[in-house]
Length: 338
Image (cartoon, helix red, strand yellow):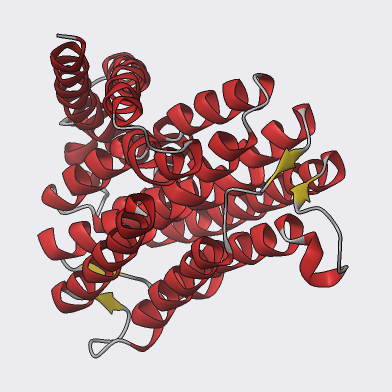
């Protein structure tokens, strides 16, 4: 009976997440168009932070309760799922067009964040005999890097917005642009959609994770495996829903921004906050997990930078990312069986 309740909670949470992602995408895109903010930036800030709220809550609660495997595994697993699973599925739904500046300025942050986890978590690699853990100092360093990332992103926003305003002045009377802006929902209504969307993402994510964790616990799976699979996939469901919805609406820039922003946010802010609360041991997270994350971020950058269709993440490349995700989770399942 309990299993059926967990399954019901999981399915209801999934439905709430999907609807919340739809509202959040619509509201965010409308606000972006009204204020001339690039969709990529909206995806990397408002949407990414909002859709990463479940990871933040889970990791902080895990840190408070002293469950380091859940806190670290949630972040590592979520980022692997974001890059391989979500980015792969989104690209298969609609090829993602990547502007030259995005590849140069934004996607490398995903690679950097993956490297930071490896450097901070595996102390024994640099100091033989040391205990692998993410210290409070590491956490504060991550928070400082998050502040730098946000400052950098906002600075680029100002430059891009200035350029877009200059182009707008060259249009004929601006009548067409004004008519498009007039067709947008009001600012108050758009803000309402954003707030309701975020609320649905957080609430739905909580239900989904509770249901999935209950099902997994009944199967006798370890905390680290649960965090890397069920919990991370559950907390990443908002990113999946938001990115696929954005891609279906033709806003692939927001889809890419949502993933990159979420990956960076998960490491620099979520893990930074959790480690600042309590030093996190990384005993349940292996080199296989960290290496998979780093390789995944590098492959994403290479596909965007050197793909057959320059600066485009194609359906074929999306399929490759998805197959990499399937291979990773297959290995985890086999390990859990042993």
